[in-house]
Amino acid sequence: MNNDDLTYEKAYERLQEILDELENGGLKLSDVFSKFKEAMSLYEYCKTTLDKVEGEVKILLKEDDKIREVDFNDEYRVDDYA
Picture 1 (cartoon, rainbow, N blue to C red):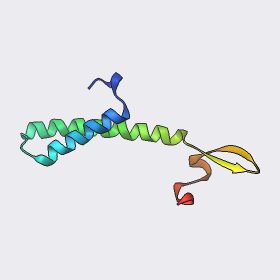
Picture 2 (cartoon, rainbow, N blue to C red; picture 1 turned 45 degrees about the horizontal axis):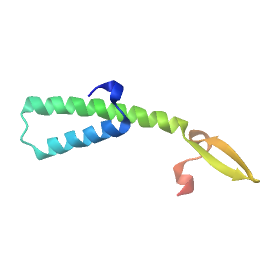
Picture 3 (cartoon, rainbow, N blue to C red; picture 1 turned 90 degrees about the horizontal axis):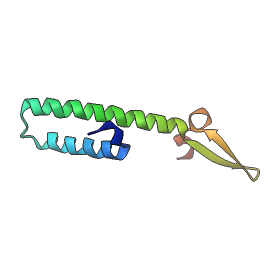
Picture 4 (cartoon, rainbow, N blue to C red; picture 1 turned 180 degrees about the vertical axis):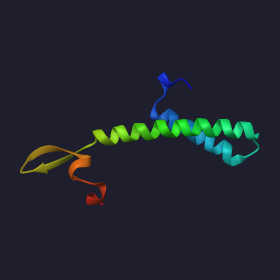
């Protein structure tokens, strides 16, 4: 897969395909190792992408009829809104 065309969605989809192939069995050991390496690379790509997006997430709060942006990581956690 060309990294220039790689999106989170494509990487996740390919990762799911690999996991299905590994779970179904019937692969030679060399194929299992190759698939595992590809899966780990895709996992790292997805994790890095999610970490980057998480850093950009803002929560909008309405206070005194004003909207303000708050860095997600600074003041609030998802648990605060559960």
